Length: 512
Ligand SMILES: Cc1cc2nc3c(=O)[nH]c(=O)nc-3n(C[C@H](O)[C@H](O)[C@H](O)COP(=O)(O)OP(=O)(O)OC[C@H]3O[C@@H](n4cnc5c(N)ncnc54)[C@H](O)[C@@H]3O)c2cc1C
Image (tube, rainbow, N blue to C red; front, side, top):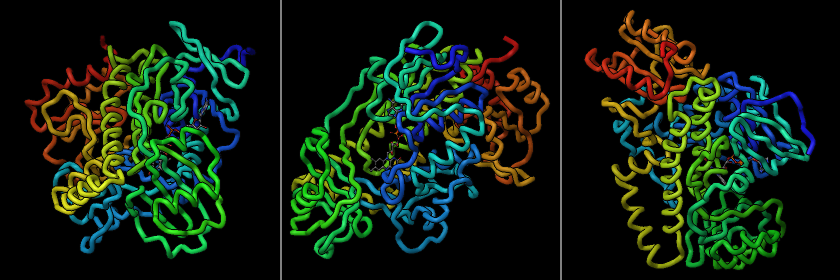
């Protein structure tokens, strides 16, 4: 094995330049880490990453994350493909599809947004549709601009870790890094070589995404159709999604997806004699739901699909992975700079594992509710009725849009652990715009000299921002982590006593 660059020791080597690896690389480079990104595929292009198969729903935490790093405005496709919830929240009135659970849509006009009183008008969209290839292109451009070294056509095949680094093998070369992060997708080599336990449940179905020519499409019903044999959906003419409850056998057998096979599955599920005359693109997937029991093993970490897999029902995997990257980036950077308080890096697993487990259960519940049995269809009808109530729509919106997502942090104020509101200051600047440099913020609406002096003890980790916002939500000061999570909030001067304690969990004072 030849050493690729004898004298270069990267701070972080990332395996996998999918959306999660790219976003993590951007976060680390923003915090001045040197990053090598090793990608297996020679080309970043694939028809499965392009519309319509490459369509990905971005939820509120993802939209906010991209907005706060100045990436949202670089995406062109969301400007054309507004998600229905956004349209309806502006227009009111007619029912609007806000998202689905097991194929059942909830009406976004029924959602009671007063449940999220800290979400300010002028915040970025609640959800957007994006194209995976465009998202990766934008992230690649940013990663290169901030100095990430991206090498394609180099599959990571193994690594050895020691107490001070990791030697990574890829494409017949060896690369030296201080840390390795596996963002190499659901079949992650890093996870397997690293001996991570990947616990979970086996699939009930094989899912198909296929672009076909159909001779007699009028035989198929519009919309997502649950039948006694499975589910079919023709999202646009010739674009099919199928669920065949075969226990995942076809997918796991890794057989080629032929025209004859897709036609046979479609005929059986739809109960028709429909004819597929050509198959252009096809891929299969399952509802296998597994999660690494820890996201860290020494100097090796996992993020994105490498850490958790589940069915794409309701589209949550990308959002989960981007959330991992946002949570991990600043913590790993602080660890590298020796500015991390004790336990900071381990809080990555502690915070993200429960969020991942919730998404896996969300996916399992949907797969169960789509089983082709009379009993399940009866339960489906009851869930449908509940979703069509105001409380039901609000509950599902909170989960699907990600508005309910938060971390269980210590702190008395209800904002602690949640995403910081997008305050707008008198000069028109927004909170999100202030977060582009990826640093923590002590936001002070009272312009207090003592808070400004206090912030100085944290050097570059924290920046002090003072001013008046058009809506301050009854707050006096807030401590915000680099990932936009509120670590401490004060409504009264009497709340200031626990600022020091809250800050000590996330930042290291230069005075210590
Ligand atoms: C049909 C479908 C629809 C979906 N819809 C949604 C949606 O609407 N919303 C949503 O949030 N999610 C959705 N998802 C899930 C989402 O696409 C994934 O969760 C997301 O792409 C995961 O990103 P990732 O970077 O972790 O992994 P990947 O996107 O799988 O990227 C991994 C990268 O690692 C590379 N790689 C693999 N092995 C190696 C190796 N050994 N060495 C180096 N590189 C390697 C791969 O080539 C790839 O570039 C959907 C998925 C499917 C299948």
